[in-house]
Image (cartoon, rainbow, N blue to C red):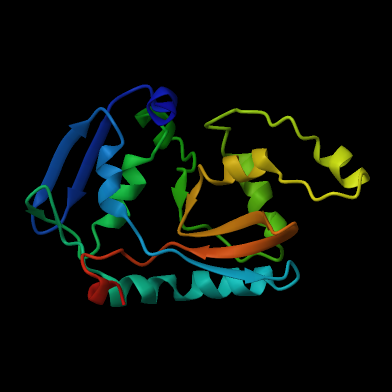
Length: 195
């Protein structure tokens, strides 16, 4: 609902491959065809940038080796049709905003990073909150008490920005950590295909 509220219009899907696909949707349901195998690598904050940059560097190779989705709605399109479909199905920008060069919520990125904070700061700068929910926990007060903040607002916002490699902050067993989430590889159609 929030994707469509932000967009203000129905979803137009256009993909040119061997065949041409032109269709509209009034939900993001076509995004369900974009499932992926998502690998998470927990790293230290100091090492995050090196691992994320490495994930970015190999993403093209991952797509090339694992491409398996050439068909959508009975049309033969890209070797990996998940890419344009995912970009279009979750795009919150109306057409007039797209032509102005405003970044989509699905994107690869545009530079190497030096810190995980580079990505979280980009998220705040470029992407308005899609689900503007406020958590009752005050992170500063939580830290002052000696506890670990959950940072629910950060994780919710980050979860609505669909990078192919995404930073993740979480708390598990009372310990905060960051992870590189690699979201490039397709899921299926069979376990053997995924492996």
